[in-house]
Length: 197
Image (cartoon, rainbow, N blue to C red; front, side):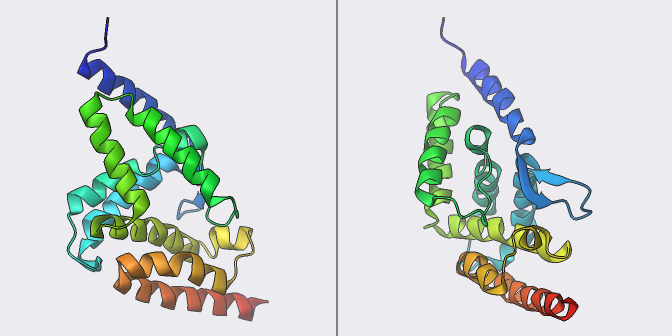
């Protein structure tokens, strides 16, 4: 007997509970532990809610929040791909696309297709909503690294130039004012690291 729409939705909700078990490299700001991907997604949705006025163009905040709540669900199947790990972007994209099809395929077809399309829009980062969502996805870990004395940058021996090249274009494209703040933080952070050496 086929599953009802409600049964499919509940199956999906139970499955995505597993996102709470995916540990990211970024610590919490109090540095008591590493954050998990579910916490990261929730936190980014809050960033979208509060910082939407800094998007480079008019955005639909509700859609941006939806993208951010969905963007890392694929990590249930493939884990987190840290930005500083130097892993293959092609392999990551392939694995994540397959995970998205499986996970959103748990939902009733129309709803699953809509959420898959929203996830794909985020990945392409062509719409104004997606550009802003992507910018926040880079902004939040940058903020964490700055306010934890280097966080994953220190762990991975990341240089100022690497931070600027890995975070800068994405944040600047979707939220130039936020990048202006980031540049100040980053320069100050790395200047402080140099003087401590």
